[in-house]
Length: 88
Image (cartoon, rainbow, N blue to C red; front, side):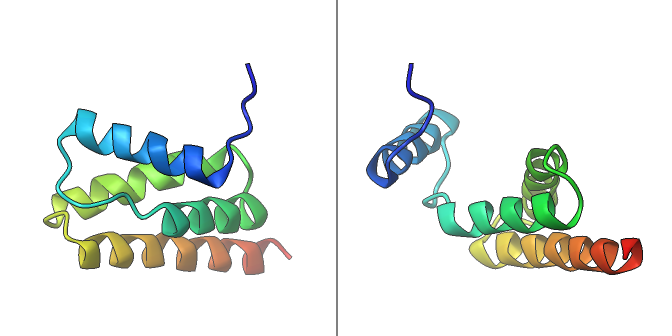
């Protein structure tokens, strides 16, 4: 099985997730991938999926709007950047 997805396959997977989980809005693929990249680079690779999950939980607890998602992601990215500067 090829585990590398072309962009259109990732979009298709995100749509399947959205349908299966009953989500109202499209998944913000680029936002989540950027969060994962930033955390992986600033903290550690294993911290990336955990951080994305935590941001999703926080956004859901705040109401789950697109603004809630962006705010939670921004908090995680800020925290990762702070972690990176304290480790130097």
